[in-house]
Amino acid sequence: MTIIRSFFTTKGQEKVATRNRANSPWRHVNSPISTRYHLRSGFTLMEILIVVTIIAILAALLFPIYSRSRELARRSACQSNMKQIGLAIKQYQQDYNQKFPPRYSGTSAAVPDKNPLNWRVLLYPYAKSTQVFRCPSNPEKETSATDMTIAPAGTPDMPVSYSCNYNSGTGLGVFANYNGWDTVSDSMLFYPASTIMVAETTTTRPDIDMDDIEMFGKLYAGHMGFTNYLFTDGHAKAMKPLQTYFTGEDKISNMWHRDHSAFLREDVTP
Image (cartoon, helix red, strand yellow):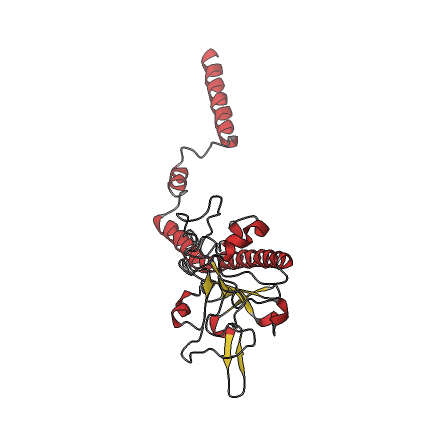
């Protein structure tokens, strides 16, 4: 009887153990199917390559959009700088009988390039910052437009980015000469909303004279082919350089001259 009882007890324990294993969440761990399942649970090389390819394609499609959006933001920041410069010019005019500032101050033309008393320096007391004279996209923005070796003490170091519209040949620009010649006031403006006052450039000169053929290549059109211009009425606008000068059979529109007359040289076009 003892042997029979022990036999049935052992069988009962085996049935309970079998039932417990059947109900256990780990019941398939040691099965051949489980082994195959775990071997295939990771990504294959082909699947990884497909995912990487898709990511690369998406990046190639989105990167130009991102670059364009970033440049549009920089162009807007540059226009904001120009509007601040326009406000500084208006404040300067209130102190100087509505006259525009000279391209640089002094008694001689000995230092036309990087003159330490250029118009940017003259406007600094009104703008109160050198950052408004720096375009975030200009490749020469870290270049100094002020010769600090001969500058008076306390002179701010102005960067390259913007040049004023000065015309030495006809006197039809906006900014005056260093000695007060060709002084321009608001009453001398024929087309305030379409006469350029300040333009984006890459030159260390304070002014840009579009009647000079050498100045043609100094305009900066790095905003996706556009250049920012500040007009005499205070608004800033992005335009392609060729849009600033139009000549037709019976019409000439030159935004660089106050009367919109043609350039002196026929081979000069912005």
